[in-house]
Length: 239
Image 1 (cartoon, rainbow, N blue to C red):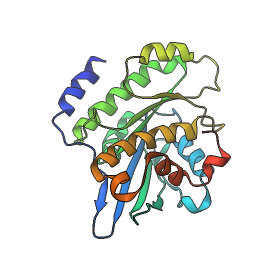
Image 2: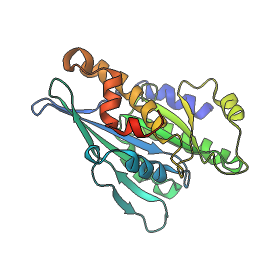
Image 3: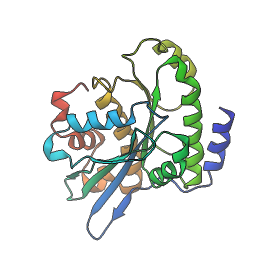
């Protein structure tokens, strides 16, 4: 935790998160990243999210694999909708490889991201890996110029369907002082997938509204931002 606090201090001197805004074409592109240790369920999260979203709200799920990591290299999920003002809002959603040897790729994918879901493994045996991966996220955020204090972040404890997992009470006791939302999921069954994504969207909206005045200039409040991103998926999933 001390290492994370050091990175938080360093991060104060880097620029704030900023989505890609093209004023001439009235397009705002938001980059979201699923980060976490190897085999924690990042890819399964994105695949389940892609399954839940309505067809007109999603593009093709692109998959690239590394030679020595059975998790996916990254997934790309382009989404898009128009605000009442005509502003086109698009999303690119990535995962990063979890293994340490792919750290340069993790930094490249994390660069210029506007929001992050940290996918932790709920199994008791994975607590050290979770901690090291979270410290890696904080360190890499600073290395690529992200302000970790300002970065919209959601922590998800996945694999709640497995035996020998930390209880929710144990997890919350460890994370009670954290400023980020902590959610629970089972990506294999889809439980918690939409809830996690909605929590991230809510955090991202606050940043984008502050920078681009989504509500005052574009007629887009937080509820509409989330609902239009998910399309009709809200009616077919918990949330």
